[in-house]
Length: 378
Ligand SMILES: *Cc1c(COP(=O)(O)O)cnc(C)c1O
Image (cartoon, rainbow, N blue to C red; front, top):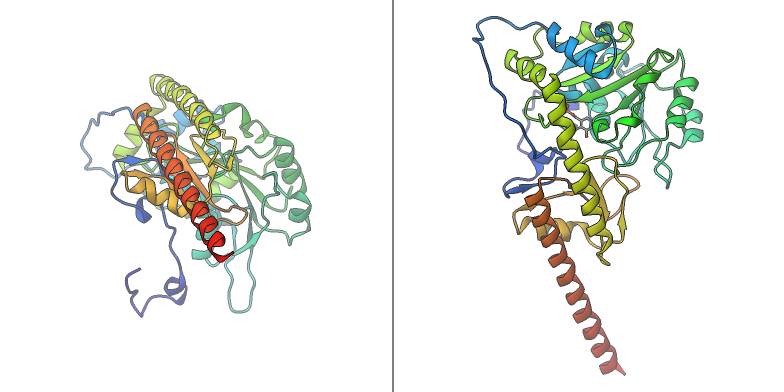
């Protein structure tokens, strides 16, 4: 990290920014490290851009409400779901100050890193309750923790790929009724649409659902996400959002993506990706060097290997980027492979198979060497 101006806030001097896939790895020609969708449609822009855009473009809000089956008053559009996370923290959590603890957010790792980073950059305390060994919520520990203002639940969870059991989400919503908002991040829900908790929105006024066009809709470059919640929550967020958060071309393209043709294209690409993912899981299970293949309900698969850093490095040498997720609480020696297009999947499977073979060969050499050494010592 380059030097930071000495006049900056102490918080800023101390902050470690989110190491996004794009920031932390570069080069290569096969990008399977950011859970993007490689099956990208093209869009046309129409107009001139001399006027300021709507803060919440009505056509886009209508389109997303219709797509999700909620009312327009329950929808906020922002620069990606990431801005939704930030707005929730800024709108609902009192920061720590010299004489006050402030509010806290509850986070269940291994999970998406931005909940903790957004909280930290807004000086909001984090309560960390790791998932259980079965990757479910540790509800007992959650309920024993000091009451947070926000609970973040990611389902399908990034980077593990599992779904959090619906009954657990309901239990958490019940427990925190009138006390805390329960934010369910459904960034990958189009890959497992039956698992959405949106139908709980009417019974639980403390439920917030995050969505994005970055994953299944193949529009990560657009920066467009949605927060779905009761109107009084949406209205609180609207007070904090920038006056012109979405560039007009973004709203144009997002609205096209949500047209019935756009939705049909998205569903087709989801089908293709789910098939490629299942084939990749088969491949990974056929490799003895893969110690564990995490089941996936999304467009990525987490693998446990002997040496995650070496595995990532071996693939980088072949121009293929995958992501090391080993630093997360509760995970060790794991790599996350995003599902790309068929050509990319053939390349990554080839490269992994060759790496595992070489690893095996050098293990055998090492074994032989140590046998020779111990033989010599005798
Ligand atoms: C990618 C991702 C997001 C961020 O989505 P954007 O709309 O691109 O900001 C949010 N949550 C999870 C779990 C993600 O993986």
